[in-house]
Image (cartoon, rainbow, N blue to C red; front, side, top):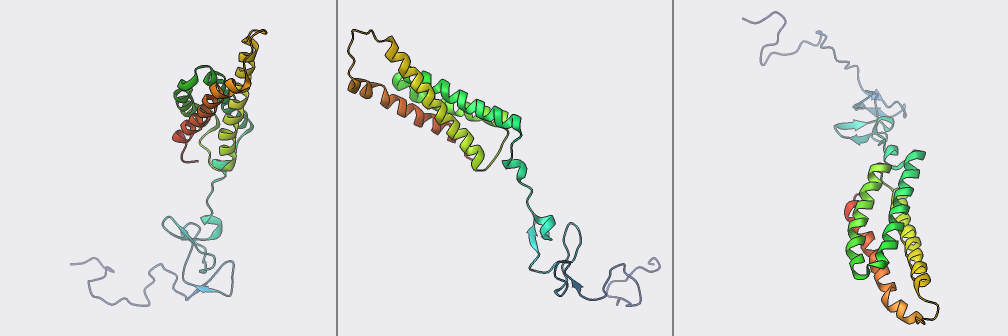
Length: 197
């Protein structure tokens, strides 16, 4: 015993019965009215032709529904911009100043401080992608490191007695390599934390 109007298995569908679907023929693309189509946008249900179809996560979408909204991943508010630059410049300045003073151990300081600096940048500026965040983080850290190293060099030169003669070559052989290695270690630490940039 079946309910009235229910279809039996193998029964033919009566074309006079309204099934709720609009089968009046082909549709025409909303952007190209001369293009015949049987495809609709998976979000807004507008008819779209193959030229307008964009592959979405669960089917085809029109161009307006299928555009990736990624502006929030690359745009900054003024507060995020200021905090991100402050963190990268300030962190680089501190690492550059301390790195030249501890010599060889500046490699370890630079690497771990770079990872910490990158984490602080993400926390204050947000998880952003694109060339601007990379430039802010890597460029700011390098500029800050150079300024900190220069300040540390000037401090070292000022602490040398006036009657002592320190040849410039000795300084180049002792301090400059450790400063350069510390900068490279800092950048490696930054990269280890934010590879998704």
